Amino acid sequence: MNKEPRLRFTDEERSDPALEKPIRKAEKAAARADKAQANIPKKKVRQTVIDPDTGKKTSKLTFEDKKKPPSKVSQGVREAPVYLVAGKLHKEIRETEQDNVGVESAHKSEEAVETGAYLVREGYRSHKLKPYRKAAQAERQLEKANVNVLYQKSLQENPQFASNPLSRWQQKQAIKKQYAAAKHAGQTAGNTAQAASKTGKAARTVKEKAQQAGAFVMRHKKGFLMAGVLFLITCMLMNTMSSCSMMAQSIGSVLSGTTYPSDDPEMLAVEADYAVREVQLQEEIDNIESSHPGYDEYRYDLGMIGHDPHELAAFLSAVLQGYTQQSAQAELARVFAAQYQLTLTEEVEIRYRTETSTDPETGETTSEEVPYEYYILNVKLTSKPISAVASELLTPEQMEMYQVYRQTMGNKSLLFGGGSPDTSGSEDLSGVQFINGTRPGNPQLVELAKRQVGNVGGYPYWSWYGFDSRVEWCACFVSWCYNQAGKSEPRFAGCEWQGVPWFQSHGQWGARGYNNLAPGDAIFFDWDLDGTADHVGIVIGTDGSRVYTVEGNSGDACKIKSYDLNYQSIKGYGLMNW
Image (cartoon, rainbow, N blue to C red; front, top):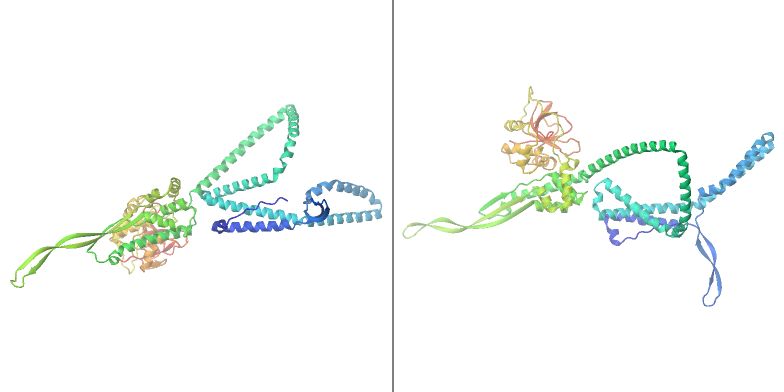
């Protein structure tokens, strides 16, 4: 039996986390295959050995690999004529045994004995072949394990093959073919001479058969013509079906190739980590005067803090393909360092102040300009959008992938909380009687928000926030309205990782069913009920059974909407203090 080739692995490969498990499986499979090979029975043969110095002959018993017995199929084919003859004899006996009960009884006994002997012989043969079957099965398992190791190594050398399921499948099939070809070449090398010796005879046989076939076709021209027409029609139908199949595969490949390759929870966790970095940066700026005391003046020149979550996800997907919260940390630091630069510069000015002094003897008062040092700390934050950072940090190939993910939003436009898919029109408030709670609201803010109804695309809101291109802008709209009403906070571009935490950390949060709403409160939605806020709007008021809202990015427009107070997709309310 041909043994499967054993792969050899270095200590470095064994310590690689991506290869550790496949290598361990391959080595276990190799051990099982070797054990199965060792269990194949061997026979002792007497071997004569001649001493080259003395010429003395000695004989000894040695183990010799026992050739694999023929398969049960070939055995059945070889013995078939014997059983056919026996069957014919039994048939002839049955034709005459009807007249003789004794003959019939004896014949049935004979058939039973022959059948029993055959079953015993085949059972013994199956038992003898069992080690060979186990060895063959072990070799097949080893081949599968070896191919998996080679596939994992190939993914490390060519990470682009892991971009989507189609690429991974194609790569694995290619490795299987290469592995099988290498194995086949090794097994058939010894048959080259035999194959060459048969070439001449085969060529002559093919020529003779071709001449006979040509004559036959000429005698049946009409039949072959009709068969040819049917064949062409069949080919056309199959080609059409194949084209549709290829088109479907192409669409599926394009869809998978434009979808973020990472799991949603990991992407949301990475987005949260980046938002935390921005919050820490803002806190550092807010505490400059306490962390750097003693200056006469603090001068601030601050750029915008904030980012488009889809730009960050597109960047990480282009560089890392599938990423996790742990594997993305180094790239997060690289992007953050490129997006934000905070510099503190000390400046000293010589200034003059008027000092008055009185002569103690004459009582005369004099004034003079006295120079002194005036210390200034310049605080400057330079910020850029991630789209600008991407063009600086990515290779041309990565930039192409970034643009694809950015344009498609990874086919997950609402992943980071960015709007409502509702494409219906804005609702009419005519006849609605609002019930005011005990908390003060801000009717002027609500009127401002209602005047925005009809805006499509959200340009003034995401542009005001600091983005240079359209993003999912529902949170930008709410923040813009609050800013127009004189509130610098809350200011957020992401619902789940910025808006909800701000209200909760300030003790200004109400769960679904909260019954003391006020005009101007924020309302957060969780469309897919996964616990993550997907959308935010501004509360107009409630009539006791429904809550009425003004929302940005509701089907990419500003609209008035209403919901049952117990609507399950209401995640909760951000309660504003006026």
